[in-house]
Image (cartoon, rainbow, N blue to C red; front, side, top):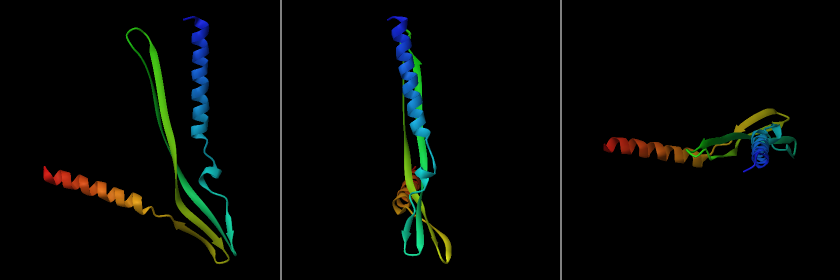
Length: 117
């Protein structure tokens, strides 16, 4: 393999990683707060939490052939509704009952398994 091909491939990988990280880490208020909605005399603004998860790795084997890879994702979930009106501002939390139920179920199963031993 010629050095030109290796340098071209290296540059392509570097560019791909750089563009991916830029998209992955591009967080702004537009990602957290949705457009305000006017309902009568009130303005309602939905708010979300954004989480990022990712990882990557590289390696070389005994014949010096290297490789690498990575992956990631971001998750957005609603956390609150901000309501502003003539009587003031209220923040109403969004309660995720499914997440609470799954957490309680997992905790219960963990305790049950520990008690069986």
